[in-house]
Length: 168
Image 1 (tube, rainbow, N blue to C red):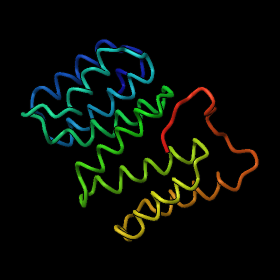
Image 2 (cartoon, helix red, strand yellow):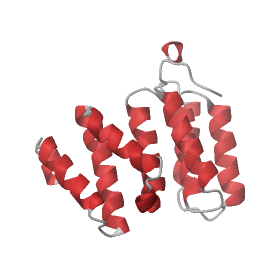
Image 3 (cartoon, helix red, strand yellow):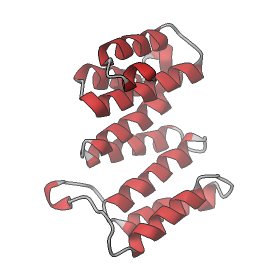
């Protein structure tokens, strides 16, 4: 993480890719994918995005990293304003991992994204599904607060949808 903070992106990218390719522990590899996502947001290195996309499409020997790669892609696409791709990444995460811990995570990410886009009905729908299927999820309260705060705020920040073609 310090390497990426100091701006040594190429070194950090190389180290994180090595960690992932070395078959490090799942948790370590997941952290490396998330850090690569953060690096991409900072420097827009297309090779980093392509690398994460490989794992999102499930390399046979690294299938276990697919959920974190899909989630990371969703966050990357959201950060760069490609909301359709962000939604698609989160929807893939949900459909591929129904009933697992990844489903509520994907749905809650959609709550945040839809809320940011000003699509409060869709955000509430995603939140209601999590509340009904995963009532004990520890992240529900944060998502409820976020949706309530921004859907009721007159000073809310909503992405400009006029230049974005978003679904829903």
